[in-house]
Length: 253
Image (cartoon, rainbow, N blue to C red; front, top):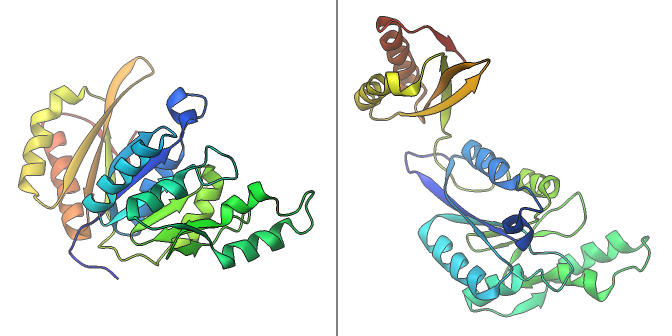
C-alpha cells in the first residue's frame, strides 16, 4: 500500500562488538536501502551495548517515535544475547518459548551434532504475543512484536529476514533518487544547490564531496517521491550548473 503519508523507522544496533570496533556494521546500509524500497524512511539509528537498561530505554524511545523499529543483534544462543528479554521488558510482557519457533529449531538441528540443546533453544524465546520472521539461512527465526522487528546481527541472515518481510509492511511512496557529479568543490556551488532545492519543495538535494585523482569533486543526489518533480529538479540543477560554467556528469562520478 502506498500513500502521501511519510512512514518512518528507527534502527537499534545492539552489541559490544560493534562499539569496540571488532565488528564493522553492515546492517545499517542494507536496512536503510531495503526500507527505502518499501516506502519507509530510516530516520534514526542508535548503537547500544549489551546492557539491559540501555536497550530497554532505546527500544521504548524508538518504538514510540517512529512507525517501525528494527533491531539487529543479540538474539542468539549465548548468555549475552539479551535483546528478547529487553524488548519484553520494554513492552511489559513475559518471555515465552514460541512453539512454532521450537519446532523449526527441532527440525533444523535434528541431523546436527548435539541436536537442540538448551543454548540453541534460547533462539525460540520471544516476547509473549510475537509472530515469527522466517529465516531460511540458519533456522532461528526473527521476531515481530507490534511495530518492533527483531533481526539477526549477521548481515546475510538479516538480508534473508528482510527479504521475507518484503511487501508486508505499510509504507508510503518509495523515495526515488538521481545523481549528478561535478568536478568542483561543493562550497563553490552551495548557492546553486540551495536555490534549486528551494524552488523544488518536494525534492531534497544531498551533496557528497570526494577527492580523487588529485582533484576535488562532489556528487549531488536529488531525492523525491514524485518522479515528475524529481526530473524537473534534476533538469533545473543541470541547467544552473551549466549556466555557471561547471561541467557535470549525469549519473554521478
